Image (cartoon, rainbow, N blue to C red):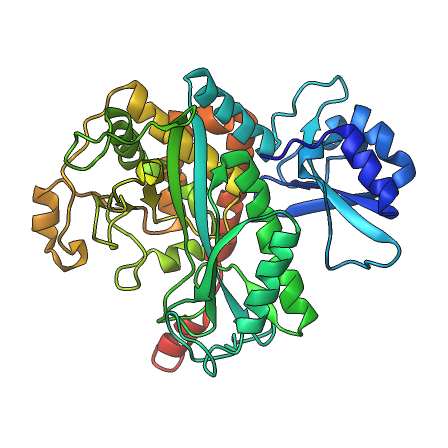
Length: 444
């Protein structure tokens, strides 16, 4: 994590003649919020924060307790490359949301993650993540989605007409200090992936929010629409956010054990066991939309069954094979989250589940290397293989009962998040869909 301070920020703003600074934060659903201040207000903002009305922000607070303070984090300062670069430059900083008395605001997703990271730090761990966020390019955002190409996995031009968009997106991200490992065409038509280089979870959550905005900004600049909607096209692969995770003690990877047949330490196995045990409970946070569950169905590479493996990519958790000399690369990959989640909350519940497995010494089941999708129901049941929630309502009911998620999110976020999801489900449940009209109108 970079170590910028207030003096650094003030100097850069002066030297680069930056006129406006955007204050970024998210609501509980993961939507980016922003307001701008002028450079004349910057020094005061860095010292004491900037006040705003939180009553209209989803999941924040009631109108009678609406005064909030956005306190910018100097470490997150960067100039926005897509704004004017000659004059009237614009920069941004992510903010922590606090009460007027200086205490952390319970409804701030960034604060939720920081609280869970402190719990890990108290146990001696640093939490690292590396998400792979997939998305689609479409011609516009109106009506039936129209892909830009019919390319497939790793396809190059002429099928992959979005190569230039991806390249410009990667260059913009790196200009903003977000390191990128890979970028390529994904399996579905007009589907793409840019993988961010792993780093500590708080920096990565900020980076994921930046990434989603940059993808959309570059697409808009070229007259197309980018979406992180989990399943925009029926019958084709949806977009996931496979999340690689590891815990470090100082410079040492706590998941690695050279003597173990899987090269996994007791802590690594406990972490996986915790994720498996609480997988159903955390699904609502990692897959928070009605549409998320259109992706979590058999046959489209998204995991459905709660298993782990080393080689098999149909499992919920994959442990990439160990390479000699790459001990620090030992990690686990959770394959269920989608890229439309709130990364602050998603990383928080993943960490909470994993730490629970370590602290309580959960035993890790044997890996399932055969294709779980091809097993018969009684075969899966005999192996004790459970299944993720099949729709948003089932996920809500499971998470409502989860003490682990309640504790990880805190009472304020937990309650407001659940309530918001119930409202979304009721709206969806009451809708008459095109499928119903096609199936029933002419025959019933």
